[in-house]
Length: 403
Image 1 (cartoon, rainbow, N blue to C red):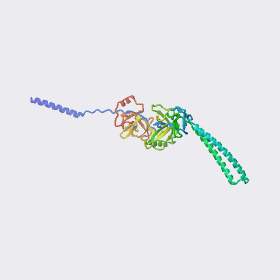
Image 2: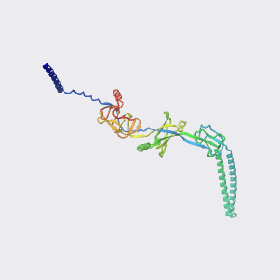
Image 3: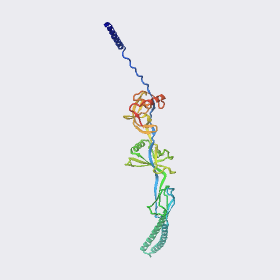
Image 4: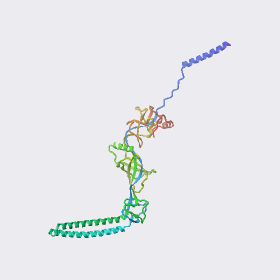
C-alpha cells in the first residue's frame, strides 16, 4: 500500500514539473495590441488676410429736430384759438388771435405823430433856407444860421423817430396774430379763449418739429478710441457721408429711409463714460416719435488686413482662446493661441496669431488634440459617417467652444 501511494505521489510531482517546464519554454501569452486609430477627418479652410466690413449696432432714442415754446409777444386777451390742441400745424399757420384794439390805437397815434413831425420839419427847412440866404447877404448873424440848422436837424430826427413808432405799432398789431414758427404737432394744453396773455411770459402752446428727426446714441470711451484708431489707420479716413445709418424698431421692423451721422459730442459724460452721437433722418410721415426706442445700425467702417475665422473653429482653454491649424506636412494639427478682435459677418476678426496660407480646422474639433493625425477635407465636405461619429463623441480635454 505504501509503495502504491508513493507511485501516485511521484506521478503527480512529475506532471507538475512537466507543466512548469512547458509554460517556461513557451513563455507568457502575448498581449493583444490595440489597432492604431485611423486619422480623424476634419473640415479645413485656408486663411487669407482681407478687409472686412464691421457692422455696429447701438441702442438709440428719437428726439425732435426742434422743440419750440410759442409765447405771446404782446399782451392782451386771447380772442380765438385757430387750431385743435394736439393737431399738427404747418409753419406760418395762425394759432391765436389777441385783442388788437389797443395796438391799433397806438398805431393811429403814431401816424398822427408822423404827420406832426413832418409839418415841423417842413417849417424848419423853410426857416433854415431863409436864414441861409440872409446870411449870404450878411443880414443874419452866424448864430442865427446855426440855430436854424440845428432846428432843421432836430425836426428830421423827430420825423424818423415818429416813423419808427409807426413800424413798432404795426409789428405789435402783427404780433396779435400768433403764427406757428415751425411745422409739427402741438401740445395738448393751451390757455383758453378769454384768458390774458402776458407778453414774453405766457406759453400759448409748444410745437415739436419731427421732420427731420434726430436719433441719439452713445459709444463707450474705449470703443470710440478704437474706432478712431481704425479710421486713422486707413489710407483715406472715412467721412460722415461714407457711413450709412439705418434704424430698426423694437419689434424688428426696419425704418425705410437711411440717415447720416450729424454730430458727435466733444466731451465724455463723466457719469456714464460715454460719448453721445447724433444721427439725422428724414421723417416726412412722422413715423419717428420723440423718445421712441430704436436700434441704430452703422455700416461703412472697415477692418483692414485681418483674418476672419468661423465661430465654431474657436475654442476656449485655460490660457484663453485658441484654434487648430494643420502642421507643415498637413497630416496633423497644432494648437494656436489667438486674440479675438471683433465679431463680424462670417465669424471673428483676428489680427495676430495666424499667418497667410495656414490651414485652419473648422469642423471636427471634438475628436482632435494637439499632435493628432488628421485627414483634411474642405470645410463642409466631411462624410456623414465622420459627422455622426463626432456627434456621438464626448468633448475631450478642458477646451470648450468659444461663445
